[in-house]
Every structure is written in C-alpha cells, then in structure tokens.
Length: 227
Image (cartoon, rainbow, N blue to C red; front, top):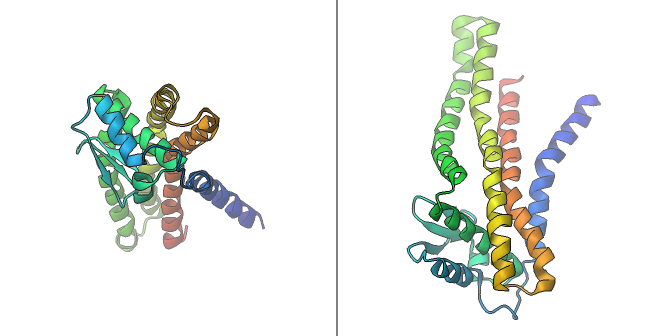
C-alpha cells in the first residue's frame, strides 16, 4: 500500500507540471482575428527591430526553441502560422532567447555548452547500466555492482540537473524580456496581458516538466535492473 501511494505521488510530481503546461498552451491557442500577424511574423518583426535580421525564423517539428548555434528561432507549425495568444507569447519568448544570445547572456552560454555534454553523458550512463549484467557475472561482488549502477544512474540524472540549472535562463526570457516587449509594444490587448503572463510562465516551466520527465528514465532503468 505504501509503495502504491509513493508511486502515485511520484507519477503526479512527474506528470502534473507537464499537463499544466500543455493545458495553458492549449487554452489560449484559438485564433484571434484581431491580431495583426502570426507568431512567425511577430518573431521576424521583433528580430528586425532589434537589429538581428541575421537570425532566421523557421518552422520546426521539434518544438519551440532558439538555436544559438544556427542563430534560428524555431517554432511549431501552430505557433509559427497561428494568430493566437499562445503563438504570440511563445514567439516572443523564443525571440527573447535570441536577445540573450546577442547580449552575451552568460547563463545561456552555459546552457549551450551543457546541452551537448549532457547528451554524451547520458549515452555513457546508458552504456554503463547495460554493462551491469556482465560486470555482475565477472565480479560477483554486490558492492561493485551497486557502485556501477549508482554511477550509471547519476550520469543519466544529469539531464534533470541540466534542466534545473537552466531554469533562470527561461525566467529571464519570459519576464525580463518577453513580457516587457509585449507590454511596451502593445502587441496584445491590455486585457490579455494576464493570460500572456501565464503562457510565458508555462513556457519557462517547460524545462521543469522536461527535467521531471527525464526522471522516468531513472525509474525505467531501476525496473529493468530490478532494484
């Protein structure tokens, strides 16, 4: 019974933030004929206005994000072509990352360096865990096996740590850059600003949701290894 309750609590902690982010985005994803342009058009306008016309705006199948290496703001089809409050707020959030990059914002540079390293570290962690049965047969030493499993899980867990470390980057983009842009530029009606603020919060918490979801990888490996 205790394990069942703990399992439900863990699932709630992992899935509820992700569900909240999706709900907020979908809640304000309806078409707004009163908006003068799409999310993609607003992103292009803001970049040109900031003198960042070298940054491209592209449709992406991998979700909304800014790629500092390719200097590209990438938006989902719905946010690139849509005239919704979600499209406008998310597009402005991603442009804010381009502004961070242009201004040499140190935490964004750290996140960019971490991104490639974390992917490699996770692969190493998976290989370490895959080797566990062979190490168990060779050594027959429980302490060595436990040490190896702990090391493998720690390496895989770096993804959650990386997402947590980069959370300040998201809040800076949403509330120190994107929200003032929307307010001062009057790109959304004043009565829509509370909802826009909520969307920007959800955009920032996308990384929290991703960090929590990555914890499922650890649970999956524990189940495979029967710990």
